[in-house]
Length: 212
Image (tube, rainbow, N blue to C red):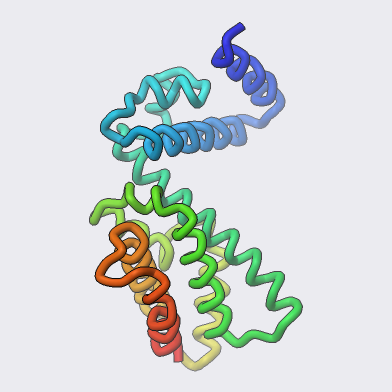
Protein backbone atom coordinates (compact mmCIF):
# COMPACT_ATOMS: atom_id res chain seq x y z
CA UNK A 1 0.00 0.00 0.00
CA UNK A 2 1.40 3.43 -0.93
CA UNK A 3 1.86 6.22 1.60
CA UNK A 4 -0.90 8.17 -0.16
CA UNK A 5 -3.34 5.26 0.06
CA UNK A 6 -2.38 4.60 3.67
CA UNK A 7 -2.93 8.28 4.53
CA UNK A 8 -6.37 8.22 2.89
CA UNK A 9 -7.29 4.97 4.67
CA UNK A 10 -6.28 6.24 8.10
CA UNK A 11 -7.93 9.65 7.68
CA UNK A 12 -11.02 7.94 6.32
CA UNK A 13 -11.35 5.90 9.51
CA UNK A 14 -10.97 9.01 11.65
CA UNK A 15 -13.51 10.94 9.59
CA UNK A 16 -16.11 8.17 9.85
CA UNK A 17 -16.39 8.82 13.58
CA UNK A 18 -16.74 12.60 13.18
CA UNK A 19 -19.91 14.69 12.82
CA UNK A 20 -20.34 16.09 9.30
CA UNK A 21 -19.36 19.65 10.27
CA UNK A 22 -16.14 18.41 11.91
CA UNK A 23 -15.31 16.27 8.87
CA UNK A 24 -15.64 19.31 6.61
CA UNK A 25 -13.51 21.45 8.89
CA UNK A 26 -10.86 18.75 9.20
CA UNK A 27 -10.67 18.31 5.41
CA UNK A 28 -10.33 22.03 4.89
CA UNK A 29 -7.51 22.22 7.44
CA UNK A 30 -5.71 19.34 5.71
CA UNK A 31 -5.92 21.15 2.38
CA UNK A 32 -4.67 24.40 3.93
CA UNK A 33 -1.70 22.67 5.56
CA UNK A 34 -0.81 20.62 2.47
CA UNK A 35 -0.95 23.71 0.26
CA UNK A 36 1.14 25.77 2.67
CA UNK A 37 3.87 23.14 2.64
CA UNK A 38 3.88 22.97 -1.15
CA UNK A 39 3.62 26.72 -1.76
CA UNK A 40 6.49 27.55 0.57
CA UNK A 41 8.67 24.69 -0.71
CA UNK A 42 8.06 25.24 -4.43
CA UNK A 43 5.99 28.41 -5.04
CA UNK A 44 2.34 29.03 -5.77
CA UNK A 45 2.93 29.13 -9.52
CA UNK A 46 4.78 25.80 -9.57
CA UNK A 47 2.15 23.94 -7.54
CA UNK A 48 -0.86 22.33 -9.20
CA UNK A 49 -4.21 21.85 -7.47
CA UNK A 50 -3.86 18.11 -8.16
CA UNK A 51 -0.69 18.09 -6.02
CA UNK A 52 -2.43 19.87 -3.17
CA UNK A 53 -5.36 17.45 -3.23
CA UNK A 54 -3.07 14.43 -3.34
CA UNK A 55 -0.94 15.60 -0.42
CA UNK A 56 -4.08 16.42 1.60
CA UNK A 57 -5.53 12.98 0.87
CA UNK A 58 -8.73 14.33 -0.74
CA UNK A 59 -10.29 14.13 -4.18
CA UNK A 60 -9.69 17.06 -6.52
CA UNK A 61 -13.42 17.78 -6.55
CA UNK A 62 -13.34 18.16 -2.77
CA UNK A 63 -10.90 21.04 -3.19
CA UNK A 64 -13.55 23.09 -5.00
CA UNK A 65 -16.03 22.63 -2.17
CA UNK A 66 -13.86 24.93 -0.08
CA UNK A 67 -11.86 27.12 -2.48
CA UNK A 68 -12.65 28.90 -5.76
CA UNK A 69 -9.15 28.45 -7.13
CA UNK A 70 -5.50 28.34 -6.10
CA UNK A 71 -5.36 32.04 -5.33
CA UNK A 72 -8.41 31.93 -3.09
CA UNK A 73 -6.56 29.12 -1.30
CA UNK A 74 -3.52 31.38 -0.81
CA UNK A 75 -5.74 34.06 0.71
CA UNK A 76 -7.34 31.62 3.11
CA UNK A 77 -3.98 30.16 4.13
CA UNK A 78 -2.71 33.59 5.19
CA UNK A 79 -5.90 34.48 7.05
CA UNK A 80 -5.91 31.09 8.78
CA UNK A 81 -2.29 31.46 9.87
CA UNK A 82 -2.82 35.01 11.13
CA UNK A 83 -5.88 33.92 13.11
CA UNK A 84 -3.91 31.05 14.66
CA UNK A 85 -1.09 33.43 15.60
CA UNK A 86 -3.49 35.83 17.31
CA UNK A 87 -5.35 33.05 19.13
CA UNK A 88 -2.05 31.65 20.42
CA UNK A 89 -1.01 35.14 21.57
CA UNK A 90 -4.36 35.65 23.26
CA UNK A 91 -4.00 32.37 25.17
CA UNK A 92 -0.57 33.48 26.39
CA UNK A 93 -2.00 36.85 27.40
CA UNK A 94 -4.83 35.26 29.39
CA UNK A 95 -2.27 33.14 31.28
CA UNK A 96 -0.02 36.12 31.98
CA UNK A 97 -2.73 38.50 33.17
CA UNK A 98 -4.00 35.82 35.56
CA UNK A 99 -0.61 36.05 37.26
CA UNK A 100 0.33 39.70 36.71
CA UNK A 101 -1.82 42.85 36.75
CA UNK A 102 -1.84 44.44 33.25
CA UNK A 103 -3.69 47.51 32.06
CA UNK A 104 -5.41 47.63 28.67
CA UNK A 105 -2.47 49.17 26.79
CA UNK A 106 -0.03 46.65 28.24
CA UNK A 107 -2.30 43.81 27.16
CA UNK A 108 -2.56 45.06 23.58
CA UNK A 109 1.19 45.61 23.29
CA UNK A 110 1.81 42.11 24.67
CA UNK A 111 -0.57 40.73 22.02
CA UNK A 112 1.16 42.76 19.29
CA UNK A 113 4.53 41.44 20.44
CA UNK A 114 3.30 37.83 20.31
CA UNK A 115 1.89 38.40 16.82
CA UNK A 116 5.15 39.94 15.60
CA UNK A 117 7.12 37.01 17.06
CA UNK A 118 4.90 34.55 15.21
CA UNK A 119 5.21 36.45 11.94
CA UNK A 120 9.01 36.50 12.25
CA UNK A 121 8.99 32.72 12.66
CA UNK A 122 6.73 32.37 9.59
CA UNK A 123 8.29 34.87 7.19
CA UNK A 124 7.67 32.54 4.27
CA UNK A 125 3.93 32.86 4.92
CA UNK A 126 4.08 36.65 4.80
CA UNK A 127 5.76 36.40 1.41
CA UNK A 128 2.47 34.99 0.05
CA UNK A 129 0.63 38.21 0.88
CA UNK A 130 -0.30 40.58 -1.94
CA UNK A 131 -1.65 44.09 -1.57
CA UNK A 132 -5.34 43.15 -1.79
CA UNK A 133 -4.92 40.38 0.76
CA UNK A 134 -3.05 42.75 3.05
CA UNK A 135 -6.17 44.90 3.32
CA UNK A 136 -8.30 41.82 3.96
CA UNK A 137 -6.02 40.63 6.75
CA UNK A 138 -5.96 44.02 8.45
CA UNK A 139 -9.75 44.31 8.22
CA UNK A 140 -10.19 40.77 9.51
CA UNK A 141 -8.00 41.41 12.54
CA UNK A 142 -10.01 44.46 13.50
CA UNK A 143 -13.57 43.74 12.53
CA UNK A 144 -15.04 40.60 11.09
CA UNK A 145 -13.53 37.22 11.89
CA UNK A 146 -15.80 34.86 13.82
CA UNK A 147 -12.92 32.89 15.35
CA UNK A 148 -11.52 36.10 16.83
CA UNK A 149 -14.90 37.49 17.94
CA UNK A 150 -14.49 36.74 21.69
CA UNK A 151 -11.05 38.37 21.77
CA UNK A 152 -12.08 41.39 19.69
CA UNK A 153 -15.27 41.89 21.70
CA UNK A 154 -13.30 41.93 24.93
CA UNK A 155 -10.76 44.39 23.54
CA UNK A 156 -13.48 46.70 22.24
CA UNK A 157 -15.35 46.52 25.55
CA UNK A 158 -12.17 47.32 27.50
CA UNK A 159 -11.53 50.31 25.27
CA UNK A 160 -15.07 51.68 25.67
CA UNK A 161 -14.67 51.43 29.45
CA UNK A 162 -11.96 54.07 29.13
CA UNK A 163 -14.55 56.58 27.96
CA UNK A 164 -14.53 55.93 24.20
CA UNK A 165 -17.48 55.09 21.98
CA UNK A 166 -17.86 51.67 20.37
CA UNK A 167 -17.19 53.23 16.97
CA UNK A 168 -13.95 54.74 18.30
CA UNK A 169 -12.99 51.32 19.67
CA UNK A 170 -13.58 49.62 16.29
CA UNK A 171 -11.71 52.35 14.41
CA UNK A 172 -8.77 52.33 16.83
CA UNK A 173 -8.39 48.55 16.67
CA UNK A 174 -8.44 48.79 12.88
CA UNK A 175 -5.64 51.38 13.01
CA UNK A 176 -3.61 49.13 15.30
CA UNK A 177 -4.13 46.15 12.95
CA UNK A 178 -3.26 48.28 9.91
CA UNK A 179 -0.06 49.50 11.51
CA UNK A 180 1.11 46.15 12.89
CA UNK A 181 0.45 44.03 9.79
CA UNK A 182 1.96 46.60 7.42
CA UNK A 183 5.11 46.97 9.51
CA UNK A 184 5.51 43.20 9.89
CA UNK A 185 5.15 42.62 6.14
CA UNK A 186 7.66 45.29 5.17
CA UNK A 187 10.18 44.62 7.93
CA UNK A 188 10.11 40.81 7.88
CA UNK A 189 9.64 40.03 4.19
CA UNK A 190 11.47 42.95 2.57
CA UNK A 191 13.76 44.02 5.44
CA UNK A 192 13.07 47.60 4.41
CA UNK A 193 13.04 50.39 5.04
CA UNK A 194 13.98 48.92 8.46
CA UNK A 195 14.36 45.48 10.01
CA UNK A 196 11.84 44.15 12.54
CA UNK A 197 14.41 44.49 15.30
CA UNK A 198 14.76 48.20 14.49
CA UNK A 199 11.01 48.69 14.21
CA UNK A 200 9.86 46.91 17.37
CA UNK A 201 10.45 49.80 19.83
CA UNK A 202 8.84 52.43 17.60
CA UNK A 203 5.99 50.05 16.72
CA UNK A 204 5.15 49.46 20.38
CA UNK A 205 5.44 53.19 21.16
CA UNK A 206 3.12 54.01 18.25
CA UNK A 207 0.52 51.46 19.40
CA UNK A 208 0.70 52.94 22.90
CA UNK A 209 0.03 56.43 21.50
CA UNK A 210 -2.97 55.17 19.55
CA UNK A 211 -4.47 53.63 22.68
CA UNK A 212 -3.68 56.31 25.27
